[in-house]
Image 1 (cartoon, rainbow, N blue to C red):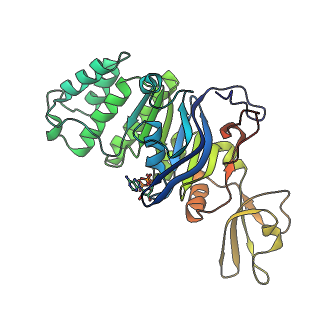
Image 2 (cartoon, rainbow, N blue to C red):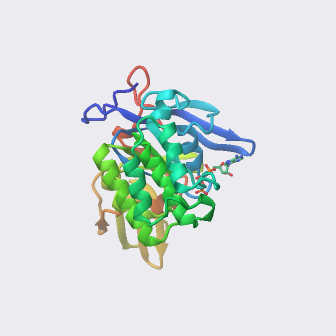
Image 3 (tube, protein in one colour):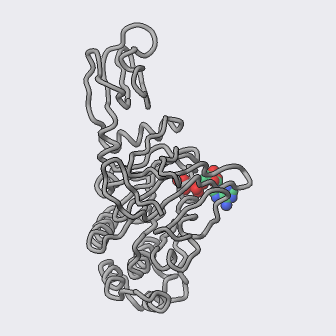
Length: 316
Ligand SMILES: Nc1ncnc2c1ncn2[C@@H]1O[C@H](COP(=O)(O)OP(=O)(O)OP(=O)(O)O)[C@@H](O)[C@H]1O
């Protein structure tokens, strides 16, 4: 396993490490050449447009899908290994619970299947939503079922929690509450979380790490702070045809011209020349730009880079 030495960073174990990961379905490649690592203890947002490959990536990590090429490791172990299975929990978009089981029976099943089961943590999550323990799963609302599925995932006390748009059927108050529970549990137990979501503002509040994929390829990976600091929003007046050289000499992620005003998100390759207003983007601005430009040049920060056997960084 890589020791995860970033430029100047301490050695941190990888919760997930993907090398040249690819998945092809009959219609074509859903994921291609993905190489990145997620250090342990991070809350990582997994972002990308519809059909980008997020569920596919999570499915490979959760051992529901086999990659067509490349490898993915969970704490250094293969996804199908007993260790990866014991240390990880996956909450899918559709929550596969037995409709005829009561909530209590569902939690009992969790207890019987998982040696490190935490009954109190699971029950607390269910009780916080006033979901009766005796109610049958089939009689619960979609949001209540999601809560039970959350309780099952948390009760397992996983080291890695994989969440695929887990909150899409919850009302805003419940989202807020469960997100708070997620953050508190993760902070207390050092859980690593990889969570796909389209709720960009919500991610801004909870994530300290980010993986962005678009059209099956990796676009961004790394610490949120580092990724934000690597970008600059430029606003200024347009003079002449095309984008000014002041902008094009940097790596341009996205540029827009409206009337005589130019707005651009760039990765500066040196000082910004000219009369431009410069701002650091917030997370939503950064993500929207990468979502609008799926073929933007990728940026993988040192802590997210994987190395080959010779210790050389592998390109994403
Ligand atoms: N079982 C399958 N068979 C064939 N194609 C599939 C299958 N599952 C996914 N795909 C295709 O792979 C691509 C990636 O799908 P995936 O579900 O991973 O995307 P996603 O990023 O999770 O999307 P969304 O945000 O809409 O949930 C899409 O083009 C999808 O149509």
